[in-house]
Length: 151
Length: 255
Image (cartoon, rainbow over all chains, first blue to last red):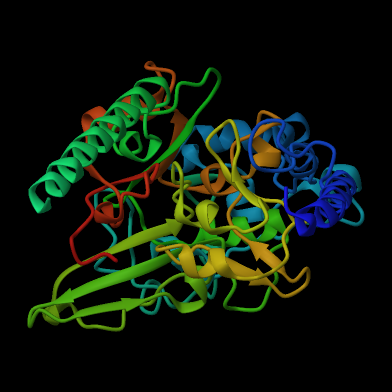
């Protein structure tokens, strides 16, 4: 073996040891458990808080509205489609006050006339001209029981 | 002399070729080239493997999915960061295509082009395609983005270095750099909700049932019913990303 290599070999060994030591400290513990990623991040992402609670939770208190909603055309909808995410409201009814929208603009996000909306999927009206004597949709319509008209 | 040399070269050439062919054959039997399997086969895994079906014919462009996504996942409110959004495509009589997505569709859509000029118009809800062996996962230099065992493409916020390679690699434009954390951000398929037995937020609030999701490993799941009943298509199939987002009624104009 050439003398140059003999002097370089220990250096190489030291370098490899340093590399392995650095590798040991830099790579997180759970890395590579399932694949080329940190397995613990799965649990971290799964532990994120949820904001939408689901219809069943709403129906525990608001059972009358939930039953009424199921009786008519809006039956597929969950409460939070219109009222927004309810997680804070479930914890504290004072703090988490949910919205009761019913303006022409809000209902119009689904029901305003648009050529891209299929008539067999959704009932559409012209929100600018439809019964302009009343300001908001909920002045006449009950969103929980769609065909029931208010006086 | 020259003749001898040529013969020896040929012998060596043949020998090396045989060795190479044999090695390729043996290695392909022991560990098949995964790249060739991406297109046709799902991975041999137990447990759930999620896929999404979106029915464009049922979508009314209300933008509830985009809104719910932002609220559920605390996505920055700046108007141009979306994990899930809706586009309205309008193909006019003269053949030009117009695509609009005001505020990602969160506030709904107003028809700007008069009915007489429209040949065809429809909404396309977009989100991460949760590709099998997706381009974004392949380019990540540190292993911060990955496909979970459930087939959900996720980002490890702690490990991401914010190099933006994945944002460039995604052919569907589904990623962005979160200005709060300075890391890549994308649709997580509401992994935190799935693990708690809840539906992802956009599926939860869809009023017409235009979007469904299911387990591809379960042959009785509704996603299989969706795929059987509809003539579905993925976005940019030529890129072979292994997209698991299947659209019904997708026009060729959609990019």
